[in-house]
Length: 295
Image (tube, rainbow, N blue to C red; front, side):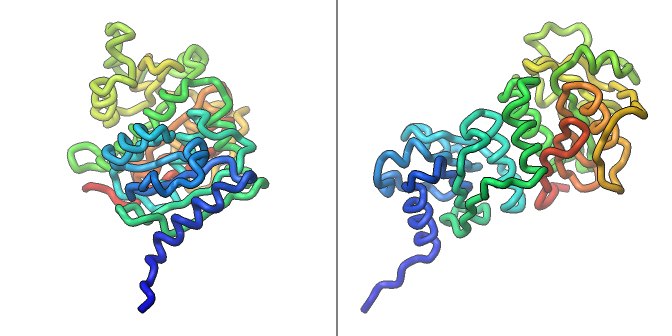
């Protein structure tokens, strides 16, 4: 009797076989399935491997084996948006270059092996190129700061505040110009603290930012993660050249304008849907949707 093979494992083995080819620069596994590293033949595959998982255990084990690791949020998200978020982290951290060919193997978000393969072509869409430019090459904000704020935005979109939907706007980098093009709506809750006490890379500060997200106005965050201010009203400019689809509200318009008139990157959480959008040079560079919300 011939033993039937698990088709999901066949997808994983196919991914490993294709990744061994010289025209594939990187293999990204977007899955909570624990990879058996003994399956890596040849061992040179390990140098190409990026593990994107929401399992801290899997991330730790992969890191111990020397693989590049991206820790994803545990919130329910559509598979394509988990891939987008993983690619954004990889690009901003320079794990992959703009011209590298990346083979993506992804699962549906649980602990099953990957059941889908993607090999994006060299000719990316305009939105993809914008995302690469924003997240990998601007130099306006430190990669770890950008990653932390995107993760924080995803959390806010999913969790809200006290079971209520919350929107938010973060403006990263070029903070002197951003402060000049904005004003305080109310008292700045970060005024008077030392820089070490108000860096968004610190977990306690990130939690404080989540609470202050209920206040009107934008957060202005320096390139190194220091929160300069909250509750900032961003001035609009009729000369700003923005590319914003019909139907977006004032928060998205403000994000588009400030990213068009300064070198800053803006990250928006939609109060209506919880989606997270990254703006650069007046247009959406990355769009991440929530699969569900906690409330």
